[in-house]
Image (cartoon, rainbow, N blue to C red; front, side):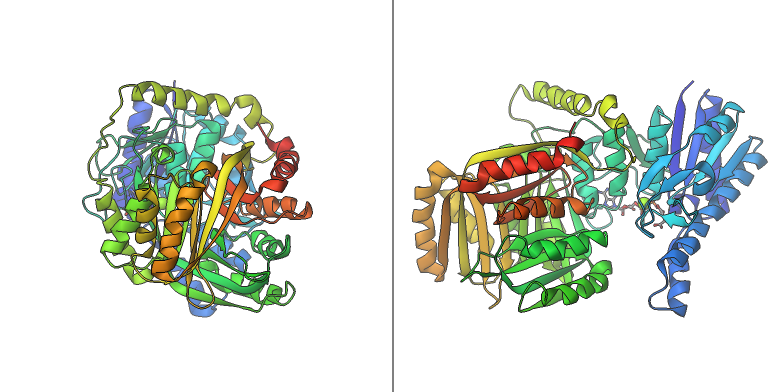
Length: 595
Ligand code: ADP
Ligand code: ASP
Ligand code: MG
């Protein structure tokens, strides 16, 4: 007998007819001899309505009471679902998060799951009942109701599938699978048959709303096969698992985060530990920062820009305001009118020119890029919010994502199998069982790369097409560029930093000299830098990790010149003279948590 978790999102339980249809899907599984746990969301847009009600009374409602309020949405659906199943002649029992025993930390509105007890669910299942669990909610040690964050029912579903060792976790929703991008924005988007955990995690964390990103952390950690499929038809959907659709495709999908905000802290003393103060407070408030870019320092001072979700802007500005003086910075500015477009793909690492292609697509539409940040498996660009959709469409078209990628080499099948088994063996049961909390961060290793040099161009004009022109010149010299960051500095001039192999430095400097003349920009370079990488899962959404890296390095007196984050790895560039010291500091810091 198999155990199946079925999750139904808001639109799939929007009215009583749909609730009955979902109930029939569950009964059909039991008729095939399976046990079923259903996880349900609030009906339709009920969560939004509840938020609106609170906002009618107060601009800043208390977060504990908001969780109390929002959890009622799911409570309505579980009860109606149980009544629906019983009316169709099947035994069923509904549970709230607290009744199941979903224990979380006490971060209201973004709580993380610590543990789940399976006893009550198992007993009901063994009595032949369908179990219906309220998604998106839990309870903290003091019996306060908590919620997991918008879209969090996916995380409840995959977490239950993990603890119950379910044979499959079906996510029923209003699309028939995962597409190369949101099909509502780009109608040509293509449904993929399968996608790897790492790619889905990155896409979800960068704005692909089809799955709550934390659910994919669970899926990868506990090896849960997830099937995203339509509530309204029986067509096969998308399997999220260890295997990518195509290991060689440079890009598997694109995502848009529409509601982003940029903050720039101006005139920060460029000394180890200064920025740490700021990021530690932001991390403590559980605010996820992305695209952290520090401009090259001019006479010992620098600017630091980073991106956060718009919803977190007010809270972040409060922290920045109170920290600016303390860290000796000159001031700060923010822009709440930006969107982030990103491309993601496991094959990106091995193929040059991916970033360049993305910059070109944006340049052709005359879309200005305010910030750039790359990582092994993703490239993000920050653009004006009103250009976000056009930008997403342009990059989807540029990478021809509407068509399946055709491999050019014969041994791709071998590489694919190897990579899949590597993921499976890396996350051994033995390791996972050592975690004290189910959503605890997963760190795989720390690595060191001492083969790179860093180049920084400053005082570049901030206009559409700039990044494309710069990287056309560089890549025209057949140079493979690794990390790229760009941001706009104080006088509205842009600066771009990137790393290359050391033996390419002379030829790149020849190119940048020409750029200096053409744009009246300046080039700085460091011929020997060290890149340190922490590898793991969920590294960006666990807000404390980048901060711990900063702190560990700054406690050792080491300054970070470039940082690039993704869910799978965080890279920092430091001077080569302290490369080995930095590596041992980070290795010691994370040794107890590593696989
Ligand atoms: P549910 O209420 O079932 O959880 P959501 O609205 O949270 O549903 O997620 C489904 C929606 O996600 C789709 O309607 C689609 O517009 C959006 N979406 C965003 N990115 C993607 C993508 N890459 N593939 C499929 N759907 C996506
Ligand atoms: N009802 C919650 C929301 O709308 C959780 C969910 O649907 O996943 O965000
Ligand atoms: Mg959802």
